[in-house]
Every structure is written in structure tokens, then in C-alpha cells.
Amino acid sequence: VGLKNAWLTILCYHLLILITSAGRVPTDINRIKCGWNCGIFWSLLPWFAGTGLILYYTMPIMCTVEIGVWLSRYNLDNLAFLLMIPYFGIVHPLLEQIHWTSLSQSKVNQWLIDISFSGYHLIVLWRLLKLPWLIITGIILVAVSRTWFLLAKKTGENIVMNIILHLAADTGIIIAAGLRA
Image 1 (tube, helix red, strand yellow):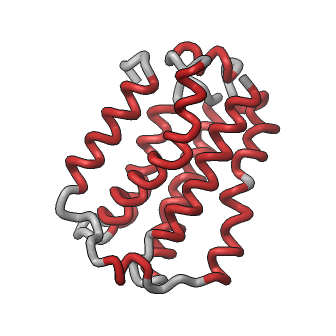
Image 2: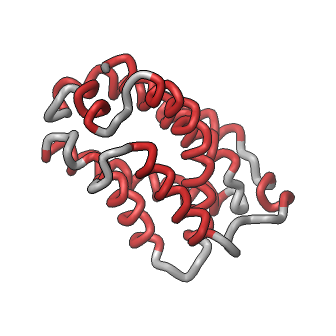
């Protein structure tokens, strides 16, 4: 959060993901694509895809400052924001799922992983959200991390569904922020 440039911050985060995930990235394509479950996927997709719509309507009561002002503080206006939409909506979910799902397959306690996933996002959001909403967001993000872990476990480590669900949520979030800005 000490960085005042959102692009520099997210690129550093993604570089750290790539470095720390080396050797844990699934390389067996059969393991990645196995276990697809349409019933589970279609029941979860509306919840993840609806995140942006929910945020669009709740941002005015959740935020300490107008979203446009916050984005501008982190140099996310005009072209920088327009470029962030596909990056945050596609690259970010892919890298996060590779990192957090592969970390879940390690010997690290899953609750620690869930709390770390949530905590990272709270560090980014702490200057934007009012305290009660920051706490609620933290709890929701722990639940989201746990959902992705259970989904990967149930589907034989299939991260494709997690990536698509994450992509749906992040795309909605960035578009809602853009529309509110």
C-alpha cells in the first residue's frame, strides 16, 4: 500500500506470485482439466458473476471516499484504468488461482492460506472501505478462498473452474469500479 501506483503494485504482486509458485504450478494438463462439474460450476457462477453488480450498488455506502478519487490516488485514471480492466479481469485471476490453489496443495494449513488470501486483499482495500465493510469483506474473502479450495479438491485439482469463477468476479468488480468512477 506504500506504493502509490496501482500498476507497479499489481505487477510486483504478480512477480512475487510467479517467483513463489515456481515448482508448484500444475503441469499435467490431464490433472488440470479433470473433474469438471457443470452442476457445481453453474450453481456458483451467478454468485461470482454478481459480485460486480452488488458492488456497484453498495460502493457508495461501503467506501470512505468516492471510488474515482481512490482510483486516481493510485494513478488509475484514463488509459491506465482502461488497460487495467483486461489485465485485472484476465491475468490477475489466472495468476492468483495458480498461486493460491498450488499453495493449497502444499503442507501449509488451509485456514492460514484462506486468511492470507483475504488479508492480502484487505491490505489493498483498507484505505477504501469503512471498517465494518472491511471486516465483512475479509470474512467473505476467507469464505471465497475456502470455496475455491473445496472446489479444487472435489474436482481433482481442476483449477479451470476456479479461474473462470475468479475471472467473472474480478471482471465485474473492475467494471463496477469504472462505472462508479
